Image 1 (cartoon, rainbow, N blue to C red):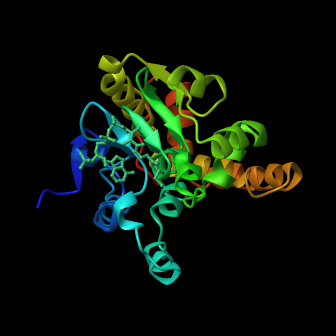
Image 2: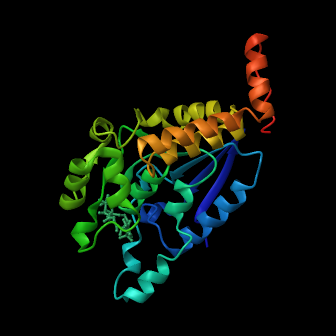
Image 3: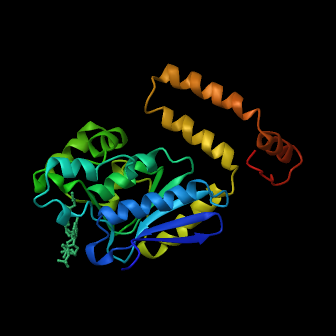
Length: 258
Ligand code: COA
């Protein structure tokens, strides 16, 4: 059987490709298991600075959960399929930056996976949507929560209640993706950004991510206080000394991640 997750390396960037192109890379149990295993390995691999996630083939990023698994399934079986750890939660709390490279259909659980990433870059040909309503269900991978936080309640309601698909340009307009590029430039542009991020101090990236993520959980006052504490924590690192020294000496910093 073909591997459901392909892992490639490009310098300090790991590219994870969901590899079920004949099913538009729909997320089934095997994909979940394999993706969790791949992420667990990457998390402890110091040679990886940034993760990129994408879908195999020209047509689709991820077209959602595998609908074939839903038929006749009991709530208990579905609850088991949605047991922790869940890929959406692992992705959204991953200590390294995660970029969704969206090459086509980005629907249902695929859109929710993209929402769990830190940055979304899409091809002009990509399409976005939460079509669960058409199956008599609702988003179950965090879509009702993360989509509304990213694009606002009104746009989240529109997408979730109508099940409509929107093109990449519109997704960018409402803030569902950060960058849209021509399809043929998607990989190069994504890797350019990923490598640029991966060239920063891994320790500082982790702290920066934690500070921004905290904004989803705290009031502004709490968050600003937390940010101040994390900012001061940076002053305990060798990388802060190196970064400041390198600037003053007009040279590139040599990060050690310590
Ligand atoms: N789960 C399982 N299989 C899926 C799938 C999904 N979410 N999305 C696509 N597939 C399968 C199709 O069944 C088809 O398989 P087959 O060739 O064995 O029949 C194959 O992928 C190609 O899809 P197809 O529907 O023929 O492509 P299309 O270009 O005509 O349509 C979509 C593309 C994305 C519009 C359509 O596949 C679709 O609506 N998919 C479901 C999206 C969805 O509801 N996701 C949320 C799930 S909770």
